[in-house]
Amino acid sequence: MEKIIKIGTRDSQLALWQAKTVQQKLHKLGYKTELVPVKSTGDLVLDKPLYELGITGIFTKTLDVAMLNGTVDIAVHSMKDVPTALPIGIRQAAVLERANTLDILVHKGLGFLNGEGTIATGSLRRKAQWLHKYPKHNVVDLRGNVNLRLQKLEESNWGGAIFAKAGLERIEVLPENHIDLSWMVPAPAQGAVVVHTMGNDVYTTEAVAKLNDTNTETCTAVEREFLRELEGGCTAPIGALATIENNKISFEGVLFSLDGEHKIEVQLKDIELSEIEGLGKHCAQEILANGGAVLMKEIKTALK
Image 1 (cartoon, helix red, strand yellow):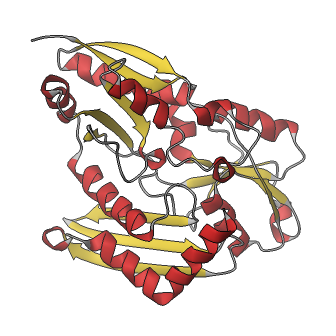
Image 2 (cartoon, rainbow, N blue to C red):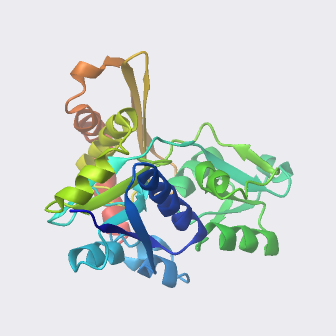
């Protein structure tokens, strides 16, 4: 049976870029597709920080519902936005080759770094890491799609704002006035695009599986296992990055207090790929044992 695969996506420029990339790859393999853009709650409610909305997977729930009721056949997501537990019936079918994992600071001049200043981000992870390095700075909330956030920065008196480099590169809006924040540990699965299908849809699942990048799938699985074990959802200041080189994997994971004062980290180097089962869970348990359990309890209490 040949059918038109309906691709569900958020309707922001970046989300559409991701969906069209999947569409192009499927077309090259001979599949017929149709894009079905939808708006998520996270795109519609822009006057509150994400953590105040109290919804895990706020950018993915609308597409989950569209898949479950048959409106779309697949959903394309920025993997870092996806909760670690998927709805019953929905499965991860492919992870595309990963793009840049770096966070960047888009700025109006770097003089403020040595004194007092204000930077903007909607991410607790970025806020905590920034305050850990620059405790005298003020961090304000910034929401909206990439273009809207760049516009808000331009119209503000902030010194800068933090973005994922991959997103700005993908839609070709990366400004010259930016610096890489190589010291900032990215969100689990940052820079990766994931494609979900219905588990009982064999035709679509088999089609999408052909797009999978094994190394990206492996690294993001470790990072998300780390996140899941810490029970961070999409709100706690948790960073994780796994990389593969010469068939060996290295991992860095961090948990911060909300104010950035406390940092608990774990690092492992050159682990054989044959020995990575449970690696993310093991690293998370090390964090929890070294004060992370108490810190996570404090974070959850503060965010209620």
